[in-house]
Image (cartoon, rainbow, N blue to C red; front, side, top):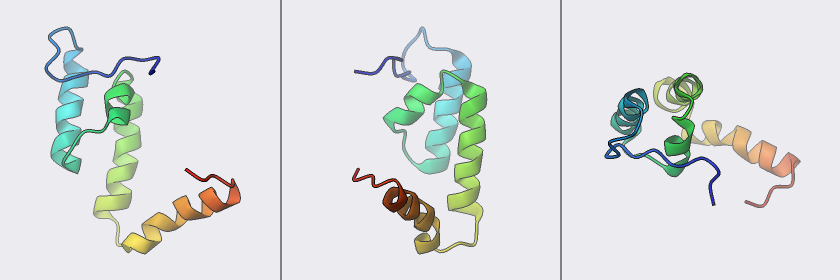
Length: 82
């Protein structure tokens, strides 16, 4: 169970800045995942993180294999089997 509630864009009590950010993320990435719904509790952090992700995945000249390499390397190094 999450310790922070997930913010939904149809919740009338949701922070308008968080809802606007969710809509922007959906327009940019095509969908909203639960991590994004929790992260928008801190809009500044969310904007910074997804600016990095947008740059890495949508605006860089790296191949898909190259963008996955850091994930695979850290997973192997940390012996993560997730």
